[in-house]
Image 1 (cartoon, rainbow, N blue to C red):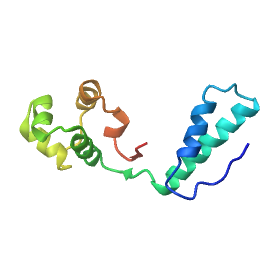
Image 2 (image 1 turned 135 degrees about the vertical axis):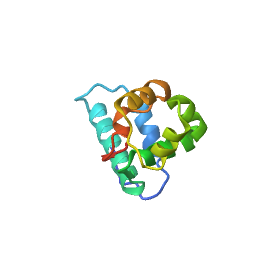
Image 3 (image 1 turned 180 degrees about the vertical axis):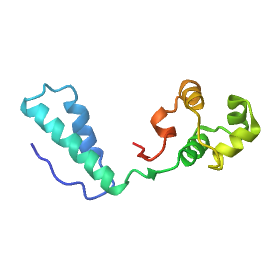
Image 4 (image 1 turned 120 degrees about the vertical axis):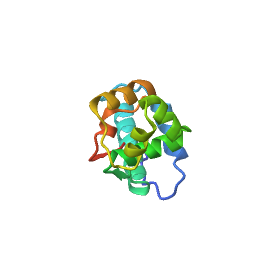
Length: 121
């Protein structure tokens, strides 16, 4: 087992080794190496590119909409009200439980991300 720290953004060797070990039986030398490599890559990625903390669900929703190509008009159509969509996106109104359920069901957004005060993973 040859495990070293990752000092550059190039993790290809570690990822290739993880792929080769994938499915190894837990508790075996190969399984132990796989567990260690996965933990190391995850730790190094979190150190280099920390997960941003999102305290406001409206921020999360705006970012989600931007990355998924959705517009405020799409949100208004989903919620049935342009003014409601605007109030939510501007942080002037919290989501209702029914709106959270609707966004989870229609857009696949985890409900936890719309509640607030959490770390998005």
